Image (tube, rainbow, N blue to C red):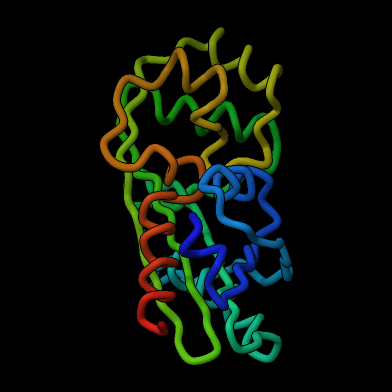
Length: 198
């Protein structure tokens, strides 16, 4: 990523997610992390991608008075959309088991929105990926919840975890988006922003 690293732009990942930081670091792009906590609630009238885009806009807005010229601040939000409902992070193991039972033998959408804030503009991209699970047994669900305690993960699972390895039958879309950051799309957008300002 010489084009990015030799450019005048400083890349800032506005997320405290270790997974997103790991994904972005795999591109070879130099960046720093600066996360600002924001309210992630949203109006009940919003659905699907509208929710993640609303939250990302709020996350980016938190940097409006801090951003400097030649900075690109990247923010992101991932949610699980299942049968017209948004499933966030479970509040406890009981809710985690409940969510995983909902997914068994069915498909759900994992939606990740990413914001790109510069001193002059804001851009937004959204990726939706459909994930289908096999019929998970109660024993498999119990093993995973006790082993991984996935209460910090949207939809109660990490696709890179054991449950994803043994339970996911099909992924239609961006795998890295399910992890929290659609890496090829993010990389392309960073390059586009830099090229627009050469």
